[in-house]
Image 1 (cartoon, one colour):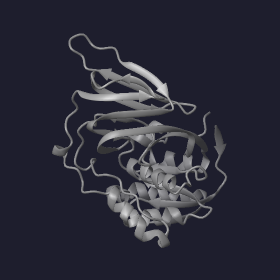
Image 2 (cartoon, one colour):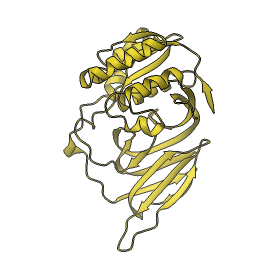
Image 3 (cartoon, one colour):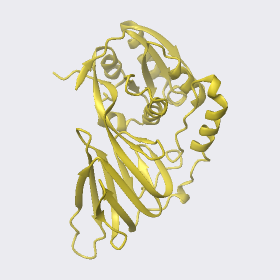
Image 4 (cartoon, helix red, strand yellow):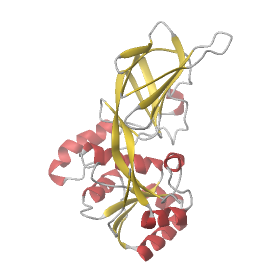
Length: 283
């Protein structure tokens, strides 16, 4: 369901990486947004300031100016503070934004900024795992090799000073040292048990080449398992359901723009219409 964004008070949070990567696009985004709405611009220097700015938004509608990691960071923070359902996000992509574009965010700076001003809020499903992590678009097992810069985990930080000590511990937990490329193995056959709503799709005795999970529609996840091919191409196994559990020996997975793991067990559950993103109005 789509609902019109009503607040013309914007909190524009400009991710530090965006300022360093493309200052001109950031300037254009600020100019377009300021011309169409009352804006407060925040220039956080790091994850903690990013989180504090988002947490102190008040009635302002938050607009993230940055890349896919900044968008996922914002969704993660709002989810973990149980504020996601009541806070629609907007985004102007600066940097790598394949994830945002797949959700419908315009690629161009001007087009994206105008969509923030004139677009509509669309409710989207979300995958939430048993460690309170989120997946916006898709996850894949095993994780493909990534460049060292892309392998850095996203960090999540506090937005409430009185809880700062506890959340700093959370930040340290979520932000280990960057993973070097050599530490992320190339994809290969894995032995995994994949269960969808408690029913086994594939068990540990059947090697698989890959598993993908995407939030579909109406609270249903689409699961595809590709068995190991020994000659003729094996037919993918497909299933759908609200809960997906994967069990195996120290597997890594790619969730949106980041690599996570290794873990031996993880369960993802679909949350229907869990979050809202401002997108261009459909003609």
